[in-house]
Length: 327
Image (cartoon, rainbow, N blue to C red; front, side):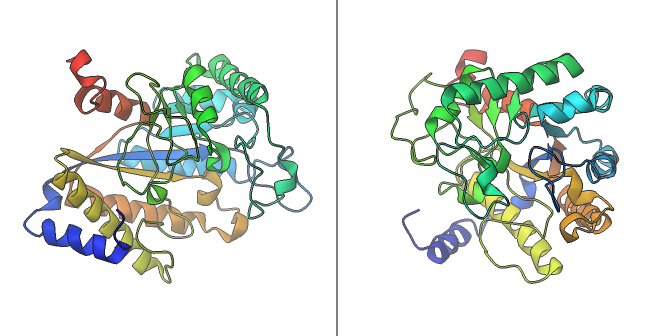
């Protein structure tokens, strides 16, 4: 991975020329950062609307139902508190994960200026973060009767090992705050390692932490993001490169001896809403995601899992720390 990117990709193509990536088993995770709409106009991050949430979530879950795919909904505790019936009903078919309480910033550094209204987010102490997470967990437990095991941080704001340690200590089994195209090794899932989160603590020790990173790979807005290109000029090109990124990942997994490839697609309800927040065309985004899933389902032996179902599969079959213990 110290090679230039283009040279490294050429080496992957050369070494995998005789492989047939379509024969690789494909595991697909569909997840949603299920939250209030981002602030518009005079709104703040503490006072946000649900205009795009209701119909956007319905359209996303309708798509999941078409593929008989259980989704993982990373939910804000405050939203679950406000709409307990919606989440109680969906908990029968989908996993209810956690997305903090009210979209709090969980990083140890101040949020970047690229985040709208970034001055509204204080840098919380370790104790304050713990209170936020426990409050969110309690809201979800009260609504659906189960403790959330999967977590994804607002703004993917896990930037230090202390936050990972906190997530582990409050009982989460997994964290999905890491985009795989920011992960130099392209391994996923993986366990917390100091090189990725700016940590100077050596967390990569046998048994040091049970928490598993399950990075997300692709999202449907504005197009498909992917590991290999920073600029996508058309929807067709975005789709082509998204499919190619899965093909590359399948080749990497086959070369490394892994028997499956993981694709974790994440989104937000408002991206599928007809309210057209931030210029989103909800129907077009749903069709784009549907076309992507159709392509994957027809090209690969695809299986849909929730984040926690995948973590269980990984622990049983692939994790060098636990697979021998669980048989």
